[in-house]
Length: 474
Picture 1 (cartoon, one colour):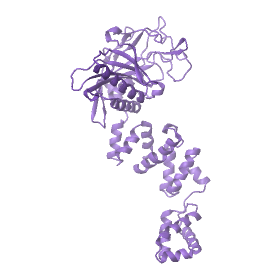
Picture 2: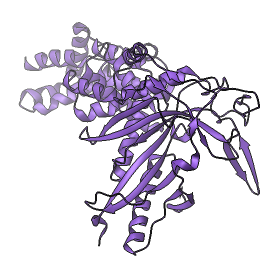
Picture 3: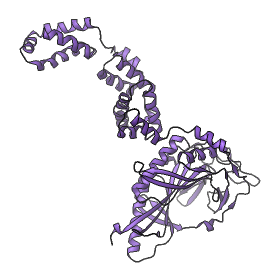
Picture 4: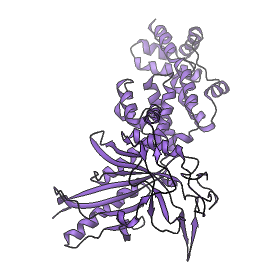
């Protein structure tokens, strides 16, 4: 048997932190990076007599996400208790949605739209706190306790780590476009559990499933899934039995290891949450939220290709991130799309990559680049000088107008002034003029160079060419 005789079956449970200033059931702040245990309310610590109060903003964000993923919104959904004990979970249970989630039956397309991945449901739930281990002690930080999460549960439709990576990138892109989650995996805003099993290729029955918990980067997801697929195949090919385990991925060794035996739903003893009413959403409210959705990345990409004439590669790059797409949209309000594409993807991206920063930290904002393009298009400066100005803008943060004035870079467009300069160059190089007229036409570039030296690159190239060619042809 070889690995090609086996097929991987993968489903994901993605935990996306909702972009809300307050928690799901309390008014405590969700700001990242605060001092330990400074963003905790009495509700978050499960003090006796406290009751949860639902943050309806979080409900709306879950609906926005569901609509963006072509899902069905439940007009009536419920909260349930999932019973388990962890030191960083003060209640001894988690408030989640098990029986009737807010959203169901979504879909997401990968492989350039050719592969549909079904998403079973999106449900709301509260996050737990964080255990911090130090030598022989463990500390509890409850800042995250009660933060609103969307758990986005895919069907087991993925078949490789490559598809897992593409699914996660596409999902993160959509979440950022609709604004329901910032997708920052380094801050824990987006993390994933991967359920992996293998079976004989062509088999209708899936194998024993193992769950890899808390994967917080696409790179680690790929490594963990690949390792787990190979581990399961090796066990089965040796004739051994595979246990249904919950696993952790050790990034230092690149291996998965057993955390505990996998629980089933019955182990959590779900029952309806007694302290919260059903969540009732009218169709009018759903329709209103649908109208507020932005143009989604696939729609935007198609528009750029079909209406603006941008090639597929550039359209893909620009729409990959909403901030980049918004930057581009501001540029094309005044300028031709193809000019905007060049200055954004070649000039700006080149400098950002070299500096090791992203577009959110760019010293040149869209309005500033638009002003520079105005000066180039109206011949105030040449395109060559435009790149010089662009470099200075990037280094100093100054506007194009300031730099052009400070360095006296405005183009010389007056034909009479340029004619005088050309006469000076020709008078100083009469021998070259004679050679040119005797057939050595390559000297044309020499004259251009001399003219640009005298004008410090400020002479308008079109005017120079027009006047110079006339004078040399006499």
